[in-house]
Image (cartoon, rainbow, N blue to C red):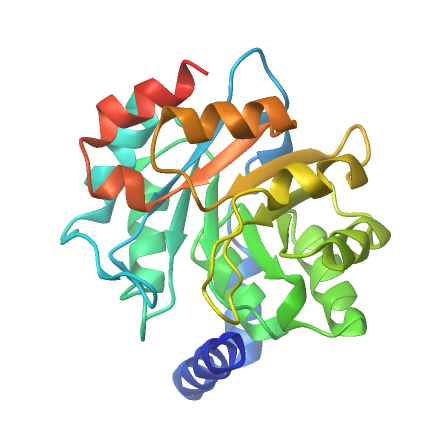
Length: 256
């Protein structure tokens, strides 16, 4: 499944490249105002930080929510205390778009993450041109040399890479990369099975000073508390927010 998702995202990016050549996109990306400091926004605090996600659908759950105005939802997230907003831009299975990201960027003053299956430099430029402050890199999807190139490019553009791991070996690869923001996803993107104990098993591999993000398997306050006790600085939450009252749910998570 992961390979299919990455291939689809790269095919869609190739189609957009026919309309927006690389050089023109690069100029647009470089003309954007400086990206916001996501590491500062997500730095450890006396409560759990939340990256709140605009998420319409997923391959594992199908349709989740009708979100005609992602900017309005993102503004609610910011007003409710979220430290950052994640925007899914993958269009085939998650029903997102770069237009969603652009709309959210205009609506909020906190960092915005482009969450997609990123595999080449063109997609990184798209993220910056649309106003992203963070870009997701999935370790399992990328050989180490390409992961290193994209990580370096994201940082050179002033953005922050969120490097996502699903196993202990992938956490080690993220650490070797020098990532300062590491996400541990409880959902295996190859099988879509959940391992709720994964974060607790690998958290100690992430060095002090690196911001640790727990992803997936967050349905209620008890899940957030479990991640907090295991050492997470932030949680990335989508489904639980878009399928419930987003403000009440977010408020409960921020109390942890």
